[in-house]
Image 1 (tube, helix red, strand yellow):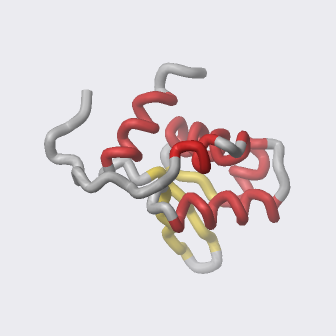
Image 2 (spheres, helix red, strand yellow):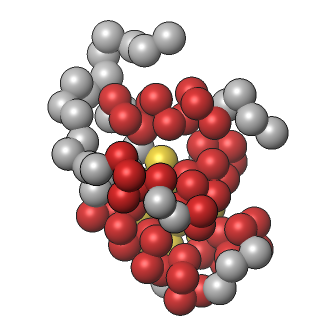
Image 3 (cartoon, one colour):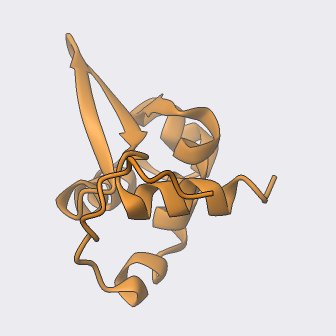
Length: 97
């Protein structure tokens, strides 16, 4: 159920661009499942390489689907569930293992 307190601003992103990459879908799925992950965990969980993860993360950050936190040199990423699209993506992936 969509919460009425969510930021109603729709993210201006072409759905085809978002879903055209299996890696972006995997990243969103893992972030929806685990909450927060660093790049090393994303590499391991998605069975991808560091460079491809960085490119996909840049696309997702640019489109405000994920946010980044810094703890010293460690970068932690999380899905922005406070946005409408972030909540929809999180809810969608909750139905899949």
